[in-house]
Length: 192
Image 1: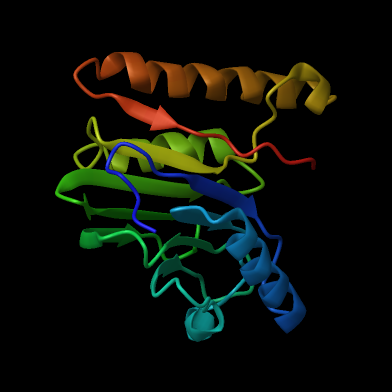
Image 2: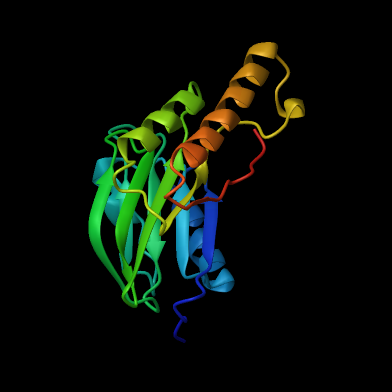
């Protein structure tokens, strides 16, 4: 089944660890049922030595960022049904983001998958966006688990509410400060 160049589906998942074989098996089955073009995973909790653990039939293009410890970890999986050619990959050493730049059927595409740290996520995300701004363009899709509440009810203390509002402004400012760049952001909503 070929995918037209005007339509791709992206599945975004926080898996909260993939060290158990049963979780990897369930993930593989769920991805097959959903049948997306691209799958962005946060919270793999795999280490640098565990990259071979994330294998799914029909998904040979797997890009990962893992740290030295079993925490964080992100991955971008691209289905074999997509003619994707990677031209640039950037990742951090702790496994909090991975950026893959390439083309699908001669159309440029950049996917940035971010897994915000539990503490200081707004500042971290802003730093990542600033560091990668030369690589972000009108063909960029930013996805992830930003570990940031979307409403005041998601957090109870004033400090956490202040951080949430600050983060929303920072993302918004990033968008408005760069009017020549159209960047698309998808947010994973998960319960904490």
